[in-house]
Image (tube, rainbow, N blue to C red):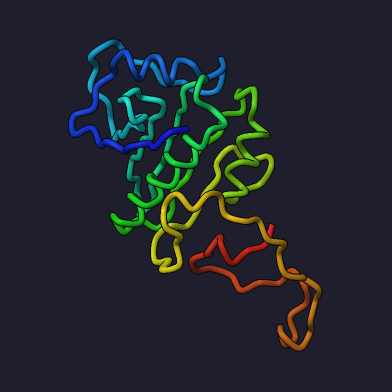
Length: 189
């Protein structure tokens, strides 16, 4: 796809472009629809081609605890051309710039391409179980974030989880410390 630009909407409203792009998603993928001209919650951005055609949208809504829910939509005619990666990179960068810890995306159970979308996000560093519809990625306090447009991150195999009794003292496998904050990036799935 030609060079894309990213535009923040200071006062987002539902319009014909949103209806066209978000409405092009397969039935069951998204449940986002408002009357024309309705004010929208959260922050919205659009991705445009060099000739000004909107081909994608990104939405970010900061939630309790320093996280942000995100949504992205790509016009069906522009899919598989890097628009989704472009939108996702910018949403993650915005969340990190705001000092948020994690972004999460919920892939609806009714999405007809749920497994494909789940895998697409997993390759880009999102974590969750195959039965969970919500996937999370740490974006804050990570000084090693690649510059936007660097493409998808490479999937790497997890380190071996063989039990090493010398590492845990007298604790057997499966016994963890209780309580406290759990950093999902440190857990293996």
